Image (cartoon, rainbow, N blue to C red; front, side):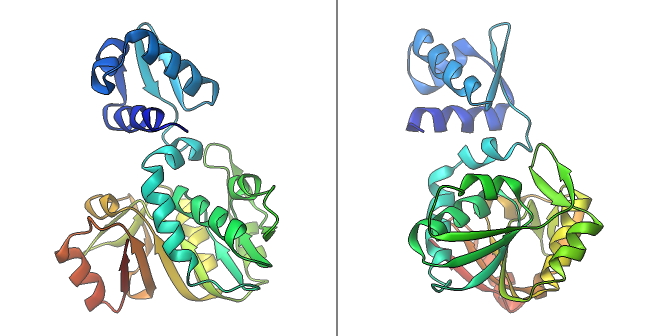
Length: 248
C-alpha cells in the first residue's frame, strides 16, 4: 500500500466521512488523483463512495484497521517477534497489531506454530512457509473474521502455551484493558487461562480510549509492546502493576 493510501485511511478513520474535494486538499493532490486512489481503496473493500463523499468501511473490518497506522503496527510486530524462538508454539488473538505480528513470525521465524481464533490471521499468512496454523473453532463473526463462544473455549482448553499475544481497544487505570465486543473479550480470557504470559500489542493511542467491556486485568499482563508516544504517566502505572513496557 502506498503512503498516500495510508494517509487517506487515517483521515477517514478520524473524520468517518469527508467530501472528496476536501480530501484532495488534505493530501495535496488533484481531485482526479484523489478519486483514483479512492477507487483503488474501494476495490479492496476499505472505503465506500457516495454522492461526492468518501466513507471508511465497517469499523470492525480488520483489513481496514490493519491499514491504519500500518508502519507503527509493523514496528511493534517486529519488536515483539524478538521474544519468540524458532520452534515455539504461541497463541495469538485477533486484531490488527496481532495480524502484523503473526505475519512477522511467519516471515522471520522457523517452525513456529500459531494457535489462533482469527480466520483473518490464518488467511493472511497462509502463503508464508515459516508458520503452522491451528485455527480454533467457534461462532464466526464475519466483519472481524474471528471465532468466539463456547466452542472456542473448548478448543483453547486443549492447549498450553508460554505466550498469548492480544490486542486491546482501550485502557484506563480504573478499568484495566477493555474491549468493544463482549464475545471477543470472553474468548481472550478463555485463551489467557491456557497461557503462562499474556502480552499486549497495541498503539499508544489506545491508552486514551475505553472499551465497553472488561478484557483483562492489568496485573494479568506480563508485557506491553507499544509505540514511543505512550505517556510517562501511563507507563509508570503499567510498571507499578508489574507490566514490562517495551516502546519502539
